[in-house]
Length: 566
Image (cartoon, rainbow, N blue to C red; front, top):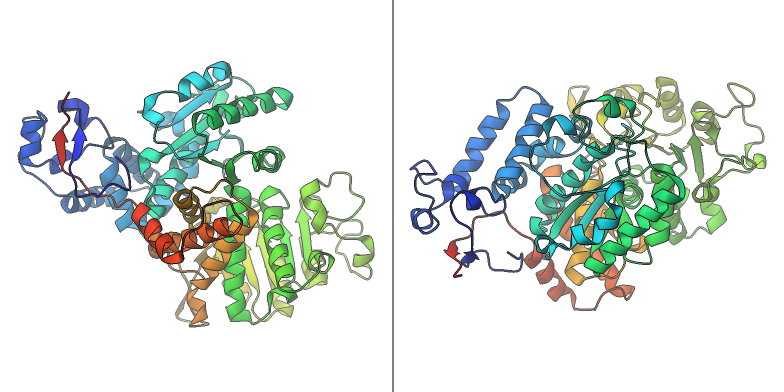
C-alpha cells in the first residue's frame, strides 16, 4: 500500500483466511464484501451480515462511550488499532475532539505507567541495550521497507511523569497515531521505537509484570555510544528518514538534537514543537492584546530544554520584529527551581545563557525573601505580559502570582503548558477567576470551557498536535533533507494565520481541535515552502506543492482487494 495509490483501485493481497483478518492494516472485519469473502477464504469466519465502515464506526463509538474511565477507553482504542487500523483511524479522524485526549495527552500518561499491564501485541520496535549489536539485523526486515518517519524515545521523561522505562513506548505509538490521523501519513510509513536502556524507576523494576530490561538506566559514554549505534543503523537502513526524538530527559534532549540535527532529517518535538505552538499562540494573542511582539515581556517558569526552546523561538520572532539580540534577551526572565537565572550561577547550561539576567538588571527589586528570587518576585518586579509554564509543577501559578500579573497587565497571556493535566501549573478556572476574566489562556492538555459571568470562556489547547503532524507532512512531501528552526517559525506563523481571533477578538486564539487535519495541511505547506527556500528540498510552484500535500494525505477507507497470484 502507498498513500499515493488511488484508494479506489484494487489492491493485490497475498494473505487469506485468519492471516488476512489478523493483519491490522488489511483487516476489514465485517466490511469484507461477499466476493472477497469467497476469494480470500473468509466464509464462515465472519458473521453473515456485510457491514460498512460507517456502520463499524457507529458500532465502535457506541462501545467506546460505554466505558466509564478514560483509561478503559484508551485500552479499547489501543486494542482496536491492533485489530483494524483503518477503522481505528476512521474513528479518530471523524471524532478528533473527543478521541484526541484518549489517544494522546492526558490519557497516554497513564497508558505509559500501566503499559506492561495492557500489552498484548507487538507494535513498533524495542531496541534494548543488551541487543545493541543486533540493531542492523533487527531493522533490516522487509516489513520496514516503506518506513519514512520514526518517533523514538528512551522513556526517561514521559510527560511530567518521569522515568517509565519500556512503558515509554506509549508515547511514540501515540505520536505516530497523530501523524496518521491529523496529517494523513500512511501508518505503514511510520515506526515507533523505544530505546530500552533500563530504568531508575524502582516501582517499575519491582513490578513482576514489567516488560522492559530489568536494569538501572545506562548513562554516560555507554549511553552515548548506544545512541550513536542507533543513529548509524537508522541512517544506513533509511538514508532519507524523518527521525523525531521524544521525551528524553533534559540532560540529553538538547545535546542529542544538537549533535544530530545536521547529520540527518531530525527534530525534537519537546523542544521544537513546543516552541512553535507556544510562539504561534502568542502571535495569535497579540491580535487581542494589541501589544506587539517587540514589546512583550516573557516570564518562563521551567527553564529546561522545552522552556529554553520556547524562548529561543520567541527571541527569534522579536529579532524579526526589529530588536537586536541583546534587546530581545532583555525581554525574558527565566525561572527554574532555584529561582531566576542570574549571571554567576555555575549550574547555568549553555542553552540557558541567552536568558540569564545580569545582576545590575535587578537593582531596586523588592524581594519576598532576601537572597532568593522566586516566581512571585519576578512577576511583581518585571511586570510581564506573558507567563509560560513548562515546569511540571502543579499549582506553581498561585493566586498571588496570577493576581500580581493581572494587577499591571490588562490582558495577561498565561500558558500553563505542562502535561498531563495533573501537572498543569494552574487550572484554567482559577486563572479566569483570579484575572476577572481577562486572561488569555493556553494549556498543554485539553480543558473544558470555563463559565464566566454566564458566558463560556474558551481554553485554548496549546498542544504540539497543532504543529508536529504538519511539520512531518511538509518534510515528507518535499523529501526535505533537514529540519530547521526557520521551519518551525514558519509553522508558528502558519498557525497564527488560522487564529479565529484575527476576525473576532473575543474568539479563540487557536482553531478548534476538530479542524486539526486542515491545520496540519496548512502548516505542511508553510514548512515545505520554507524547506525549499532554504535549499533543503527541490523547488516546485505553490500550486503543484498544494496538490502534492493533499495528494499525500491518506484517508482511512477500505480499498477493494484482489488475490495476488503466486
